[in-house]
Image 1 (cartoon, helix red, strand yellow):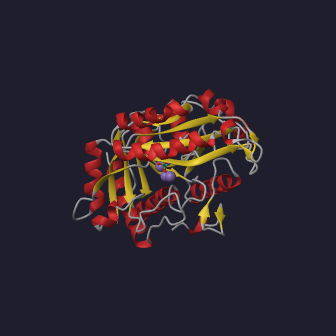
Image 2 (spheres, protein in one colour):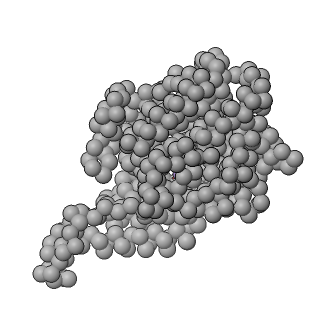
Image 3 (cartoon, protein in one colour):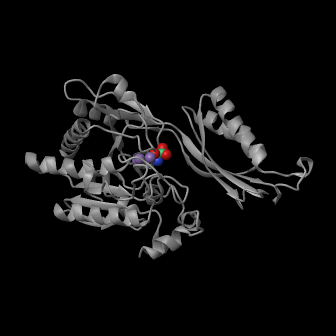
Length: 389
Ligand code: HGY
Ligand code: MN
Ligand code: MN
Ligand code: MN
């Protein structure tokens, strides 16, 4: 299903994808999206935050549409399916509806949200957070990537009017209902032996930046007693995060560390580390961060409260997507644009497609062709049902 874009941002050495927001790979994927929209005669729009919308029918605040989609950016060395499966399936579902001769009574839209992973600027779901006002424009514009480029620099270089980003009530009013199809990031559907599932909830999660400061000095001539080595409190934080996470029933991850200046023969002066914490309860997530905070300067980079998807919409999707027996309904520990929209009050839902490995944010992420096709049929059925009056 993903062949047309399988080469974009692919690291042939690892099979992983590097598709940072506003990178060359991202720009190529945006062109692909525009081509797919044009091939279908859909009305292509890019909103002020760089999110892409391809419309079948003309939405308006008085006649909002049913929108489906996801994102095309990836984590670094990510898998092929996280994001793209939702966008490719969205176009394929519209094709299937047309093949069925369906003429929807509501506009149908395909969406592609900008920078869902936050791999480059650190804040996940950037496009949907800006769209809904969950992220202030000024804060976003000042975010910097590892090269010190700000979002403003990068968007300007990409030919966008960076200063116009921000809450977009007009675009938001076009979305009557949003459905995101996504590869499952876990083994729930494998364990239940089903190809397609429906999301019940997104667990609360956040990202925090820890800065440990010490004193740079020579690796060979500085006595241990004289050292102020930021690596030590950093290492203690990682171990404490793991121990406290077990105790508090949450998951904690440090997947990104920046050691500066980064000499093998010098004690570092500064260690920055990003902590990702998620769990069933927001209080436990925040308590874990508090457990660790003493050791460093701590800054909250992003926070997503628990998202409980609308039960009526969720159950309707389970019936429609499940065929003879309702599709399984299951929570996820992964964040999604659907969660940001739901939090902003947009009726939203998610469909999951089975991932036989259960692995995600890694080249080992996978979905079988037959299950991807089952996902498209389920999505088409859902769109058809939701687009009836
Ligand atoms: O981080 C997440 O949970 C999502 O995949 N962006
Ligand atoms: Mn992801
Ligand atoms: Mn995703
Ligand atoms: Mn998502």
